Amino acid sequence: MSSLQSRHIDHVVSVATGPGGAPGLMARSWSRCVREHGLDPARPSAARILPAHEVRAHRQSMEQFLRVARAGMEDLYRRVADLGYMVLLTDAQGITVDHIGHPSFDDQLRRAGLYLGADWNEARAGTCGVGTCLVEQVPLTCHQTDHFDATHIGLTCTTAPLFDHAGRLVAVLDVSALRSPEDRASQHLVRELVTIQAERIESADFLRHFDTHWVLRLGSAWGLAEVAGEVMLAFDEDGRLAGANSGGRRLFADAGRWSSGDLAGRSLPELLEAPMASVWRLARGAGQVVCRGRPLHAALRAPRPKATAAPVSRREVRAASPLDRLAGDDPPMQALLARARRIVGRGIPVLVQGETGSGKEVLARALHAGGPRAAAPFVAVNCAALPESLIESELFGYLPGAFTGGRAKGAKGLIAQADGGTLFLDEIGDMPLVLQTRLLRVLAEGEVMPLGGDTPVRVDLAVIAASHRPLTALVASGAFREDLYYRLCGATLELPPLRERADRGHVIDTVFHEEAAAQQLRAALSPEARARLLSHDWPGNVRELRNVLRLALALSDGGVLRGEDVSLPARPGVPAPRVDDTADSARLVDVLRRHRWRVKAAADELGICRATLYRQMKSHDIVVPERG
Ligand SMILES: Nc1ncnc2c1ncn2[C@@H]1O[C@H](COP(=O)(O)OP(=O)(O)OP(=O)(O)O)[C@@H](O)[C@H]1O
Image (cartoon, rainbow, N blue to C red):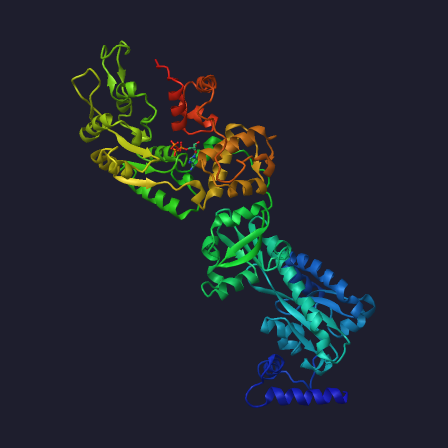
């Protein structure tokens, strides 16, 4: 034993057993070695090398991580090999599971324990780069006489802990040299290198693990956010966090509100204190996000495209409960549906409010289909659409000879047709006042009097009314009867516009599958196409979304829909091109004819809402021909 080694042993023993505990990271470790692990620096233990089959078992338990780490180790080795260093990776127990060193030093490295299968756990090897890093969980340098064991005092080892996507310590990255300058400052640069490389390995592992998720990368340096975001947050299409890297966990822990344990599942807007739209906007290119009041450079990585989806049949789409499939993970929508499920079938009149195209009729149909009247008729009446001259006879029906121009046998009105089922009064706010009075009587008495008749007919109806105009305002201005309003709004369901919904991903998928099935295509949506759809403001709501997807699918080759296949209005917030009021009336008639005068279907093809089409028809004197 050299005199240097003897002096080292004395020093370690005096520090480790000295009074008052040992300050500093290395001295703390020496103390642990003596007091907890029962090690004696005067009795060095031989390097413990595990047999090959045990090493294999250790490697197998972290196979995927090893593959990613290997690339990082090779890169690191290229930078330090000329300076006489080797690179080593251990698992969380301190067992060396991979190493790269110059083959000509193989024997020396093996003797020093810098070899596959070597056990560097502190409890066995004493204070060392790997073992102490496993305990302290920070990057550190164990330089020469920092080592506990006197046989290791020639070595210099710099290490950094590696955490997996869930924040668990899984490995230690180590750069070691058999010989090095005595001055520990010589290792500063190595420590920087190891720390950076450890972060890169963690990032690569994080991106691999979350490759089917969106990943938001945030950084304080321009340009770097895209390739090496200090903060990485993986989330799903509904904006729910699936995982955060060390930087992300630190960011939220520093904010003092969330520990790593309760981050998953939280919504990104809640965590970042920024609207989801500002995140989706990044799908068009890197930019800035104001995160918790602090502007950060940001980039978004799209998920790996899933295997081409099998076509979903209409039957499959319909298989779920009609109300369930209207929304994904959007808290206001889920609350609305929970309310809807409670009132369905209870004889409570429902008023649905929401912007045009937000799905008021879809919701009304789902309420009907999800209730006890599902087998009975659902009759939709568009109160804005019925020509004033016909509205009475259409709604209430008429007896033979009730008026000139009527059919000889008379006709059953829409209200009577809905008997036993659901009467859906769409655009109720546009119903003329005089008819409001008659409708009120029907609802109050449960009877309808056909034109020209003197005996009322009993009707049993579930009533759902809808309007894009707030009915309370119409009541206040005198355009809508207050008593009718109260008769209709047993429960009000307010549909949020698509741009405010956190489950836009769900709506996009549903409509996409429905449209693909309707066109009998085996199509899938690429992440880029989805990103474009998610970042749009949807002034025309779900109707606009459906039109965009219908067109994109019709023009596509039926495979994966790419970003460029999706054509959106030039500026976000600007509605899709619409037929203006001077539109050629021949074209309108043509489209209407093709849809057998089903105004809703014609409006959908024209990309306008039903009310606009009716307005245009009115201004061109186009009248729906009488049926029958
Ligand atoms: N949750 C949804 N899932 C799938 N498609 C939907 C959904 N909501 C609405 N849609 C689609 O959006 C379009 C417009 O829906 P709907 O006619 O119900 O809207 P609306 O609010 O009644 O519109 P308007 O006020 O113009 O009458 C339709 O093509 C419908 O199929």
